Image (tube, rainbow, N blue to C red; front, top):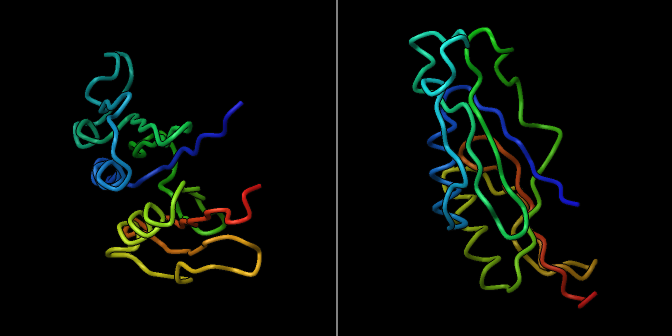
Length: 140
């Protein structure tokens, strides 16, 4: 079983996923625009360049996303209320990922050792998504 986050954007999904790829590495499993939709799917010319679906494997998970096209629902109102938690294998990896994610965004809690036996920090990336970096130090 796995749990894979799906992020929705208002026109900047391509930029966001290029950024996430630069942070985490890897290659897209899929990346398609609304221009690639079947002919019977009503898509405005202004939406054809938007991302219909993208997926990026990160460890044993897959981060997925899309833009909202006109007529397919409302634009996202907020990214508040949830965070994406990444569990790195080393402090060096935690430091690298955290620095990259917070670049252009906001650091909410510095990456540091905590009383709950984790190396932990929180930030909001430049696309408004909340991230937690959480490396378990207890070995459990």
